[in-house]
Length: 428
Image (cartoon, one colour):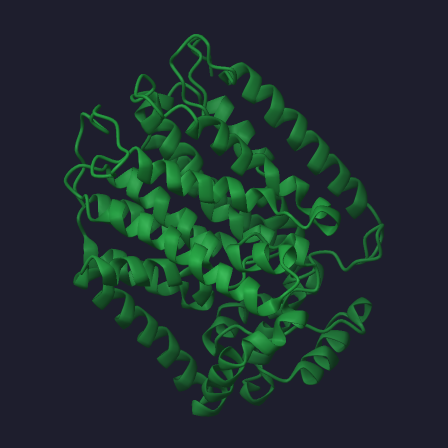
């Protein structure tokens, strides 16, 4: 596909000739990142058997989903929250996985989703899951790209950026399920754009499999009184949890509730590598030695992020839906009590939607800083391991700054410019 020569870029979205990140440069950066990440990963995987060159099980977290699927296939609901029983089953089904244990946090119905994969060997099941995850990710990126009229001619740039997105790399490397969350959040955006609020709520309710990713949406839509969205989400949550109860009985559901209630005590198990987490709670806990002070700062900063996001959503007649939804996705990541690097894949729509909006707003005072901030949101997860020594997760700072700047340039902000946010008003 031929590329236009104007310096509009997917992340900076500048039409000004002085844009420091043009589409050409972004293609070069994305190509370098993608080649480095995927070539090293493929080399690491190129070993016989199910252990990679680092000695880790290929697919890592997928073993947990595979084991849950085997439990569902055997209707062993009593073992859904028994780490030892799951470890024994995993070792039986996948001998190289002997000694591996995973903290069971997913609601009961999630295991039913993976039951079909349990009929395959681990290697084939992992390959199928990789292909499904990549297909979901590609579909969501393609759908959002098609919804961004300013970037229709930048297909190659978007493709390279999508392939090199560190969050997508981690999604595949960990064998995680965050592509499903991306699908839910992307689908909800398009339904809100069509003003199908109840259906959008039904889709958002599917996030109950990762409830921390639904927290921001619940707070924001309650605050603005979006009752159709709330009703749809509640029905969806109830239906999914009821499916687990009907399949296993009530006991596993009760055990899941007990695990969620006591999850704070399980954080050492849940976050063995805190530098791989990217949210406000882990940001402060890594930076501040005092647990009480870190928790207080997390609460204060989370309230600030939610306040900016809610303020923006209350401007439904002035602020475009794309801008509001991007603020919601960033808030989803930031206020989540637990968020690992692969969950950042839900920010893929943010990179495109804000860039598309910026293309029409480049002349507005105070807007251009969003371009570099998006670039940092895209790349800074690569520097997560440095947090072991610096204790500062830079990606969290970049995301929080993005939320603030989106609010700052909104029409009703006390510091908003006199220039209208958008000539085209989008209603949800």
